[in-house]
Amino acid sequence: MDPELMQTKIRRKMFSILMTSAVLVEGRISAIADVFDALITVRPYKKAWDVKEAADYILQNASTHFDPSLAYLFHQSLPEMLAIRAKFPDQPDVSPEQ
Image (cartoon, rainbow, N blue to C red):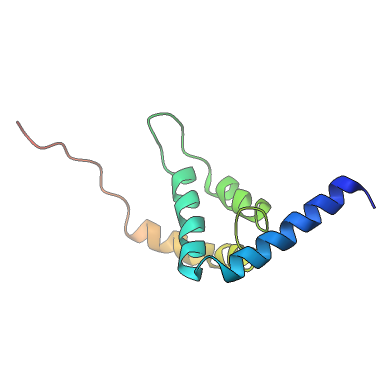
């Protein structure tokens, strides 16, 4: 077996073990939500990613950065989350009057 492929498999297995035992599910959910929100939101230093690109990023990084089962559930729930986001858009920042 290719040594690089073997290392990847070992890393994924270790990630899976660590995620299921060391990090609470709430933390794993928050990690996905936080990264997704950061990717699709404009920041002073970057443009917002397209929603599809951001969702694909989450799936592509399942097993290495995100819990694979939660990444899959995130992807399945995306249409409903986007409907909620459209219903309750972010309010623009309002500077206090001086």
